[in-house]
Picture (spheres, rainbow, N blue to C red):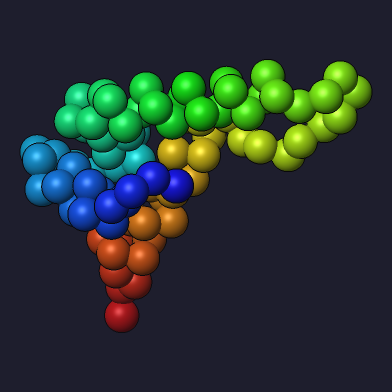
Length: 83
């Protein structure tokens, strides 16, 4: 999704105090990396403006795509299955 995503997500996780949830992670990401978020939203806007009239392009909105990336990363790196 963006450059050094794994490293940025690790940094976000280290800054969260209390319970880690998708929402707390999302909020901390926006706080720590506003420039990355702004660029991600700008790229989405540029892409949606470039499509031709009548064409549909299955590109999720920036909020949706970031939340999905967070969810997948947390499942892979943070949440461990109970034995």
